[in-house]
Image (cartoon, rainbow, N blue to C red; front, side, top):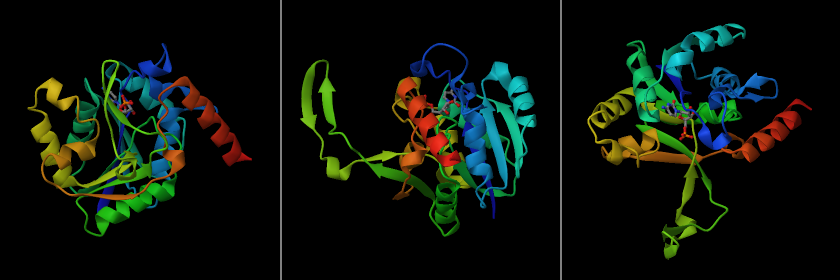
Length: 233
Ligand code: C5P
């Protein structure tokens, strides 16, 4: 079995503030994207990495990545309008002998390689799809405008991280279906597992890792810097 990791990295990252695309923001001396590729590249299970870059920055990203040494082949393709389109474009470029696909956000630079391997092994052992999950610290409520509609049972809820893992055929079928969906229906499905769930594929949840959190807001960058400093100490 050959395993490929797709890294969607074509988002603007506006919640992080104005400036260069989020994946290219620097964390501990290297762009977020470089850290995210390192996480999958250092995993024993990954043979090939495909990065979906902002379409205008493909050459710049290729040049940037050429400055680093990688254990796996790393390719860059132009991303799409939304995250799903970016993943679909990368998926379409995978060689025929790849049968396990991991999708890992560039915005999760500190995911441990052990987590990547745990997700890949779950698929290699027979699951069609797998996501790492962590319990929620906050209470979650459904709100309409300024009115609370109801409170959800937190004990049943989990936050879902990446890498998410898939048998290639399951992911490809779900993306082919998603390509025909109206934008408003697609925009509420915010991860790849959500797409395969809509197809009746069962998704296995395994324990996630605190360090695999998503860098979304400026505070997250500070936390990531602190974690990186601790790792290097
Ligand atoms: O917007 P969100 O935080 O959910 O983005 C998750 C990941 O999807 C990020 O790594 C981002 O770069 C990527 N993305 C993408 N193409 C887009 C939009 C987001 O690859 N058009």
